[in-house]
Length: 221
Length: 94
Image (cartoon, rainbow over all chains, first blue to last red; front, side):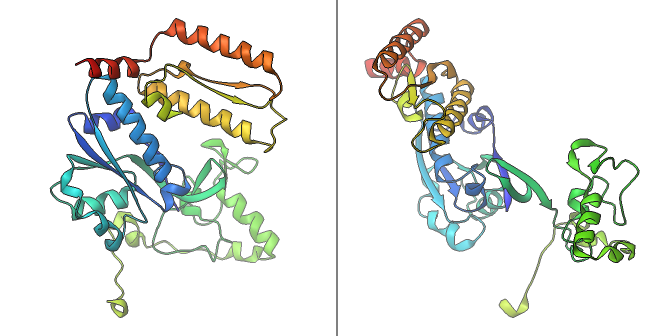
């Protein structure tokens, strides 16, 4: 899922300091799971903003809505009739949702309420870590399900560097060496021979470095 | 907790069971974390996290409950009215 974190309140106040009436829109998917932008977080932000404004002797009317998602037309359309009633909208969706909303509703300023961090997993409640960087050409089949692009600091494709020490990466002792993890997993799977198979030079054009990407399925249009 | 401060409460305290004696096992530990998070939020918006506190009191410990109530009362009295309450009162008077 996409993992995000709440923006500092001060920054959000800065976005709407001259507003009288705002809409805060949450998202029921990824940002709910990482406790950054779901219905509860919308309520907490609304309360915090109201108090911050009251303290300055200012009024701020806030409407709270949480959509199922903010990356599909059907769900974003649900607020079409009310969008122009507000001076601004704070979207607690990931960057995808904020942008999609801004593309749809051109006459109301849309501000992000969270910082979108990465695609990752819930390791345990309260701890999320990165797993995928959407390179567009998945090699997880060759690396026993562990990604050297997102988890190796150097994005190496054919084994660890000289900095790998006791299974940890040289950039930070808290970070596992991805290649140590790959080798250990291949051993457990009895597929250590795969380690000797060289992964060829990657075509990075499918990664973000190749420009903004699009997927089209003609059969679905 | 946020709603209480939003409505003008000068102070809020959360009373949970003694650690290790929660009927729901970890309810009071989760509450402690939520209180700490809310304290930080209250600091960020300028209300002051010191106006919110968590205490652990056994349900049957009346004297401790009274002691905590007195302690919290003195603490909030020293801090004075919450900036939210002052602003709400000012607005009402205007």
